[in-house]
Image (cartoon, rainbow, N blue to C red; front, side):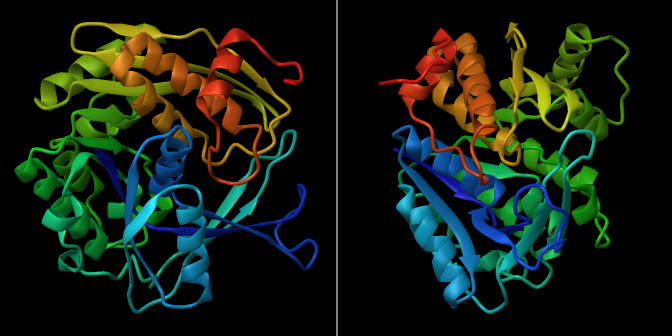
Length: 332
């Protein structure tokens, strides 16, 4: 069975080293995109994954598709349409200077694709799950309608939906959007939500009074009450000491129970972009073994992703095992 991912393939252009954008006249390029990052993370762990997207018929689009295919994803659901390649620019943070992202995605092939460009009954054939994120509907009215059509088609076909909130204010604010309504509709179809108490507060218009673990449980119970299909909520708790050192814990809530890991100290961060997508891949990978396994697998992949340049998690089960066993010395 195959997990299907729907979202935009992007090129990331980042300043070399830890320079500001165009401090020197060159940029490093890699392929990314939230949903593609999760797909590649799972493909690296041996799962069957299919990417559904749209790219332009040019060298940039072909390079993005080739990269995803090279990491083990089925790209038969990626079509070529009119438009341009979606881009984003990254100035990596350092010390007390935070990373900064500039989006350049307007008018991309994916952002302008009409909802009926995607044949969901065919694309969901043999699917065990559909994975969406809040970035896709944030891109504009066309992708918002397309994401809802995908979720409704999955529901009609009996295919479970996982949804990563991935709230991007800059994208929603660029058009006359209603994020609360759209996200509520999408999460209404999901059995797994990747999001924390802040995401749930935005959705429900409710402030949660508890602190730490109690606040997260209060938010989870409110989300379970509001969304009858929802069975699992996965989140991370991140404390940022500076751009080079974070502390991260992973948490899984179900209707009956919850589990939260100890914090992992992540120092010497190489690249934190895509760490949330690595967490999602780890949770989906570990969830068949129960919520403890899902939380530990999610923590391992998100922690390991901070060590790897680029957007994607390329780690295998042996890497997860070594992390959980504390195997930080050279493996020979």
